[in-house]
Image (tube, rainbow, N blue to C red; front, side, top):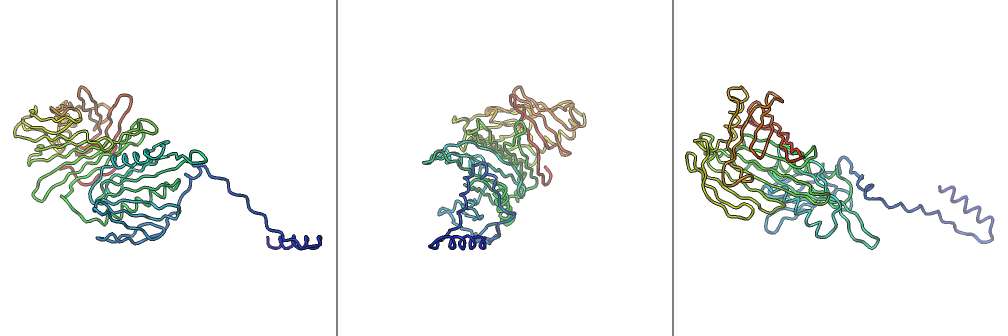
Length: 409
């Protein structure tokens, strides 16, 4: 190129009376990229490593430069800003206790909606990370600008219960795979370096939920035992249900059961929230024999009273139910089982009775029915659910177990 420019300058000088300086031509300005083109951008396999001091521990994370660490003044979280070699850093919040995945995402969506126009919301993936669920979501939004509407893309990741819960976001189009990789690595190293606290976990599962084949959430089950031998069963779930392309309903629920020495439920609390707003908080307590008292709120109403179970001992735990399915129903000792459970989201004032029967579709397939509901579940060798289908009108909610640790006992 230099030879060509020199030759042009010599030619001009020899053909004109006065020398003329010739500048090289300017390259054409690059055409502006569309949002779809920007979304295709990706990071390298690694942007680098940085050592981060969190006060109580030092961890190595993936980042393209020094990580900014900012503890919350009220000690509710620690904020990290991880540069990744793009315009904006990945922003993460580290929490000391489990967080509600649906409520966390719902709050983020509401904040975007208060400032911009949401064009679409998509649940990108539901994964299992360090024995716990993880959700990845992206929001396309529109911003008013002098040249017209400008589009943006916000990526979200929430790891609600890894022993060190994390919520991350990145407000820049593209880099979806890199964002998922970087936040997953962060959540993993934080989970592995977190100290063990709380009661001993003896059994744990994570299932991923789909609605007509599309991922919508997760369920976790955890059996724990305290030092004095008291056993608990906790079931936590989150569903992100689309009402339209731009409207979601985020449902978080938890059911915690205390078991006595015989496997009977001595207390069961059920909590449910929609978009972070509490809808249900009911507690049933065993008073001995068939009698339970209940108290709490359902859809804003205060409720309290008593009811009796059909079974003489009270509600049997999932452990006893699994044994009955395995040893009685699946061996054809009985043709059906009656299963009582306290499900206040269906009815808070009385037990719900299921009838369990073997299904013709497989040797370990069980149908559980009520007058309002039919559940088809495939159980494992312990009588615990591996996969479940619930018919909801024209939709099928399918739950498939993706992680298991320990035994339900």
